Image 1 (tube, rainbow, N blue to C red):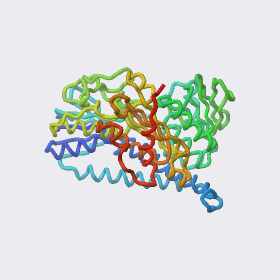
Image 2 (tube, rainbow, N blue to C red):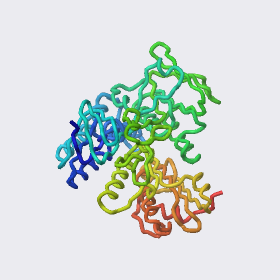
Image 3 (tube, helix red, strand yellow):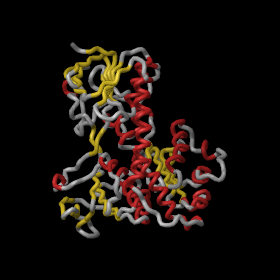
Image 4 (tube, rainbow, N blue to C red):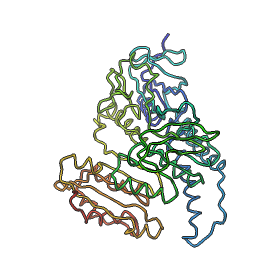
Length: 458
């Protein structure tokens, strides 16, 4: 006999537990199904562990810069086992807290197992049959393993298996010069590895403006990361206990050789084993679930949140999906995906904070664009901290005075960008923040100066 619920949430990642708590609080008998790790990617193998490792790597790096600040830390020795233990402890604290929260939810039952649709709003979970009028998918994504010649013949790591590494690789070769790959590149270079990044595109971070991508490359190369771009054809092979990456690049040696290989070339949605056809849920060619502006799928009574709906590959967009679903269901508040301003960060050191359009998108919008740009060497707080790499850049609509985009690459850029992002959401003219009095000495206090030097974007 099927077990009846008012609602079923598939996946205990970022959006799932919060929605389950709201459903239960509304008096709905709710099941939340998780096949593996409560907390999903972010808690277990994504944001929390990687930023913990970034924290250790920065501490090691700053100790090595002691001479610049008037002290010596002596001979610095990295204990990767201890670094991993610290990371594991932070992850456990987060996952235990989440598990405790779920256990205490009213009207909510956690079911362990793999869920698969057998019919509309009917799911099989390891021999159990669950049915509900409302089903919410929060199944996340996984690392893409690219179809590179030889990929089945060599050992490789992904962002997930990197979390198990407890030794410093002698030479880490990273295939993929985007956000995940670059964070690992700087991190492991600071731990003591030799690092080579191989990117198929002509530049790192193809989504970013050329000047942003070029400065990020320069930041990494200053720390000794080798970067090979334009690697249009690659092939993998073994040489004893080494991994070889054969390249076709315009410059540099035809082979990158390392002790370890990390594949960081993108993500795939976890939709291939859900039985979506039986549920009547449509996907696009890449497997992402098609949703409307309120996260509703093509099937009656089925919603999709988080990475698997293709509307954002971030923890913060997943959380916003939950907010949109809950607001529409229970609050008579018609929030929608298209209301949000795209924003994200690259957590290298110094970080990149991004909001809104890049230059190419702004030009294609057909508006008259003004641009302001300021090197971090002009920022007193950055000079005082000894952190002068990078720059700040903003894009403005010349006619409406609306802020269209921002790239803050520099000290605390991932935090500072929110001052601009919030004005974008408020749809206020840039003069709102330009005329605000900011605290001295901070990095943000230079935003009004930046906005006072706008020039037409050619």
